[in-house]
Image 1 (cartoon, helix red, strand yellow):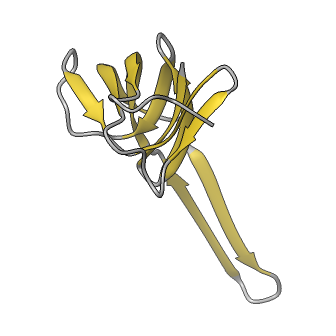
Image 2: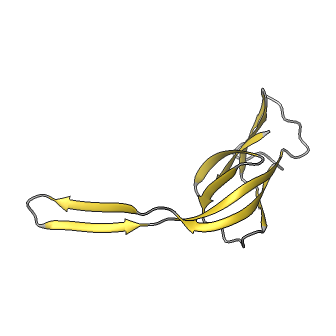
Image 3: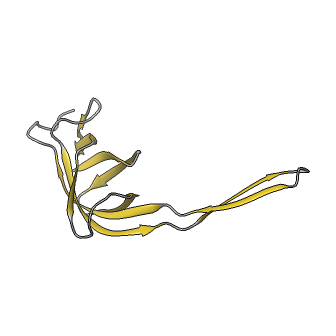
Length: 110
């Protein structure tokens, strides 16, 4: 069974056992979190699409670690104007492991 979840303004296709890095979530390492913004739940050929979310569907995950991505370098320049700007950015992330995908009591249908 797989699901499409929405967190941090992005969408991720997940299934049980996967590890993904999402935008930082304020949760302690080792704690369980429940993601309730499930946009789609599917198993084989049967798919249930939410409007905009699937009612009662949840994804349970464990927080593995917090960290920061590699630095992205930003360079802005205007030719012949003596303008140059250097900037860097490191985005925070939370690494989570998907433990279970629950489609609620409603049967998954197409």
